[in-house]
Length: 188
Ligand SMILES: [Zn+2]
Image (cartoon, rainbow, N blue to C red; front, side, top):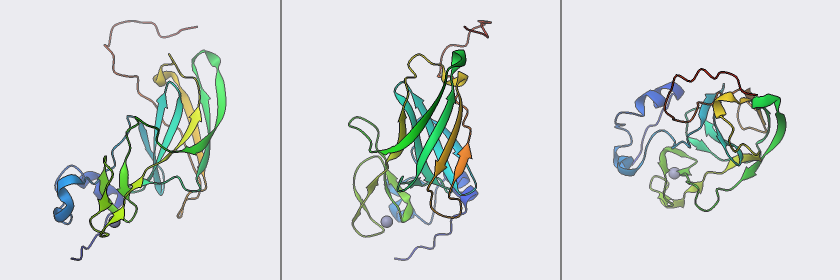
C-alpha cells in the first residue's frame, strides 16, 4: 500500500478543511493540520510556531512549514515581553514535556497526516509508537495581564532544516469577552 504524498506547505493548510483522498485509508481519525492550543501561529520561512500566553508563562510549540507537529529537539529560545505598565522581561525558553492534564498531541514524525489527541501507533509505519509533542516554556507571571497588551519578540535557535534560527513577533488576541463601549484605552 503505497501512498504518494506530495504536500505543498500552502496546499496542506487549504486542503485541511476538506477531504484528503490520498489519506482515505487513515482518514477516520487523522487530520491534516495539527491541533493547536489557543495560541498565535506564526509562519516563518521553513517553520511554524504557535505561541501561547498563559497565566504561568509562555509556551512555544514547534511545527513544520506544513503545520505538522514537530519536536523541540535541539531548539532553544529567548523571548522579550513588553508588558502593560512598562514592565519588560527577557526570558529563556527551555524544552518541557506536557504536564498531567495538559492536552497532548500525538503524531508520527514521518507521516504528517497522523496526528491525534490520544496515544497510539502509526498505521502507515506499521506500529511505530506516536511521539508526544513537547514545547518550549518560560515561566512568567502573567496572571491578570491582557494578552492583547503584550508585545512579544521570540527568537528560536537550533532549528532543523534550511532555517536554523527564526525571530518573530506574535500578536495575541484579547481573550473572548463581551465587547463593551468602555473607552478605557489607557491604564496606569
Ligand atoms: Zn508513520
